[in-house]
Length: 49
Image (cartoon, rainbow, N blue to C red; front, side, top):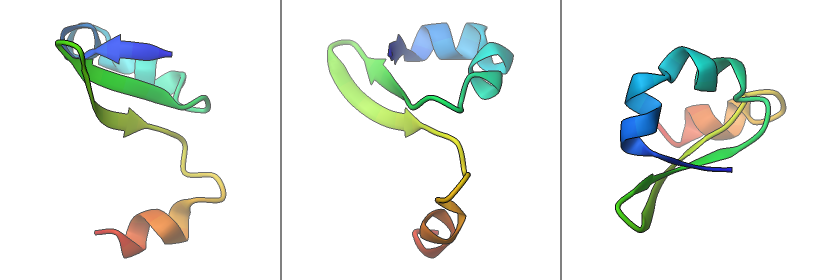
């Protein structure tokens, strides 16, 4: 599911709860971020910091 940055700002709680499914955050026409769950990805996520 693609979600605009404005939609994300207005409904952050909803998207945090739904993060079990990957969501792409867009800024007018361009993909800018990926919101996903940490299950099975924790080590990968920590290494990228």
